[in-house]
Length: 215
Image 1 (cartoon, rainbow, N blue to C red):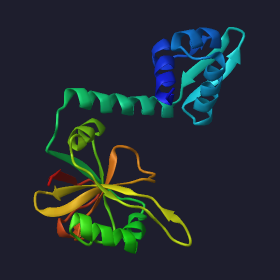
Image 2: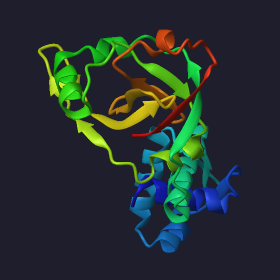
Image 3: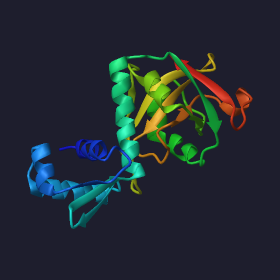
């Protein structure tokens, strides 16, 4: 059983924001799994910070955390986009100053080599961060062919793979959206790489609206 299945069951039973109270025996019958599996999965959800679980005289009490709610919402948006199939060719976002970590990762030689081979350019050593509408972002990425930048290892650490999408920025600058395998950014924030320093070339500042389109 996937985490999302049990989370959805709890959310549906508790009307999303409430607390679900039941016994592991009743839950096992509803879900078609053993009581032991129910208890184990509930512990896993709690350990992952997806649900708050506690014992009570009435059985088990479970409630989704904000993290669990966000996970279900993310899956909902993905499924909604899949079934409604509204593909956007362009989308706009607001410029946000990042933490400055992008320059370090983008400058790694094994990444740079693959960027040149697979994306067709050597990137400026930094990223342009945009905050997007999450639902529109999913619609934009739907059906969009991705390019995998392979991860690698050094003596010091491991660098994860990167999923990239070729784009045009403001209809004229070639670039790519990159989604690192390991990222601390929220799901509605994207990182863009390009051959040029886009802030300067496009005269952008904090909060500037930037339009990207599929290449």
